[in-house]
Length: 227
Image (tube, rainbow, N blue to C red; front, side, top):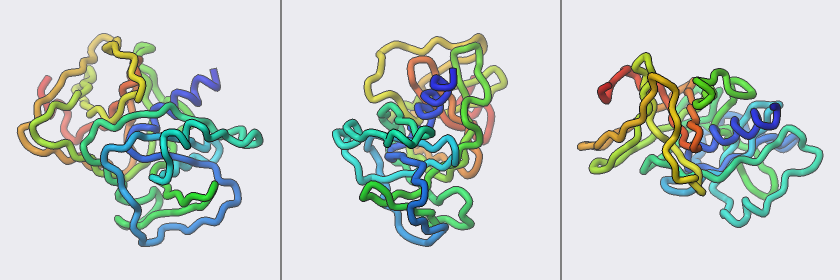
């Protein structure tokens, strides 16, 4: 059960187009410094997370082949490798690291010959709620902006209370079937007639369906895209 919780948490965390890593032990760290972080728009997300410390770290300095061949050191028992994912937003920008005071401030660490910026912090070590055994919800702190271009559709998950969540990622190797949903939940495509920008500042809920699709929110206004 514990390993299942770890795997689920990692899958939920790999929601953006940023490679993720955590658990650097005694690696050198710069905290909340104003420095540019290279951003990614359409790259796949890859991830590791430190369940002991709770920090999630990102870098663009990784290839799909390099990540696939990377092995977690045997003594790093709280490190776990995530499944590769593909972002749904057309643009994803990390604004600042958790715990920093202003946009453009990031916490950096260097390990494995790469520099990483902290992009999220776990609010719990596993799902804080499960809906009908079909949707698992995790809470993280993150500061990022998602942009969805006009002229496309975006899947929106709506709960029984009208809360809505935009899809942010899917598995790189998607199983190809529609998710089973609990009673009162629905997923509908929304056609965008103009550009949509969504800002996640602080606590964010990540909901993963049983086909691996991950949604983030909730949106500021319940039922913003209709019932």
